Length: 167
Image (cartoon, rainbow, N blue to C red; front, side):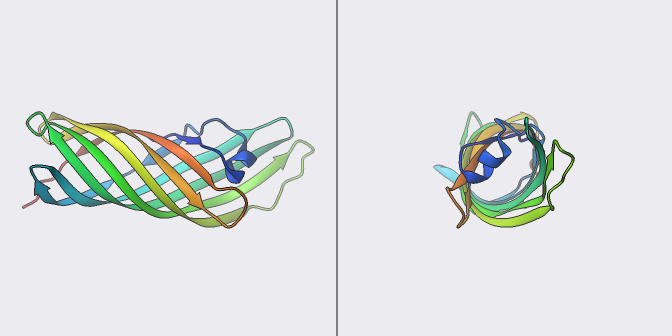
């Protein structure tokens, strides 16, 4: 579960909403470097967020899809059952099917866009039973565009996962 919270900029000013509660995020991590001071790996993260806003003048709908590639650093504690994760990377975000539905009954043409991103985040991962873990954290995503002020959002995430053995 990964809701998004706008952190300013031209794009999210259009949507005029404090939060987008319908969001999901996945992560696939490969961590080949394991040292006493920390583990280092790579991560691929797809995400989806439903962008819906109701205001006095119009309703605005759309969807945001993203794919991020991150460097991952893990610091393990407590017999390798608790880890602090730091991630840094970038990727792409696509805003799909953005449409204005005005109160007078008129509709705008649906538009879509593709944007590059940079992102950074931190989380805590706790193994609750054998290879099953829960994870909670936050991530900041900065959308890169040549139009107007830079836009970004904060994504909070709570997840459940499983670690597969690496032989």
